[in-house]
Image 1 (cartoon, rainbow, N blue to C red):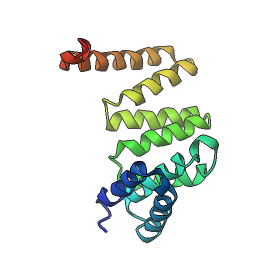
Image 2 (image 1 turned 45 degrees about the vertical axis):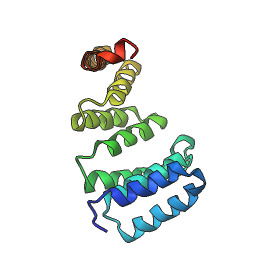
Image 3 (image 1 turned 180 degrees about the vertical axis):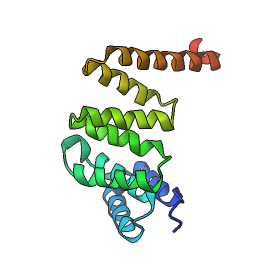
Image 4 (image 1 turned 180 degrees about the horizontal axis):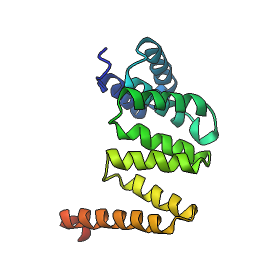
Length: 159
């Protein structure tokens, strides 16, 4: 398997989403592939996602393993923004706000039009008393939403 090819891992994840009863089988396959192909960013990312969606991150289970997998992905494929975003969500659940902010800032650096990342940054800046930065992020979100509406006039007219 080509370590840079995301398609096999994406196929497994699609199979899991298409058939929830396959969730455990897919999780085992991803773990197995991760052991066989430890430098495959996609396998590591989707394994982390599988652990997260299995209730790990949201319920404090497997947090260390999820973080370790996502950190590997950052090294293996530093231009992939989704792992940075998921690290931010993981840290937010643990109230590690300075690390959340860094992860989300890295996310928007890699994917400047990530509305969810900008929204989370605005909320976090507001929660941590950084009102000016919160307002800046909120303004960025509003500009992106306005541009989206302008680019798709059918959206605003209800068509």
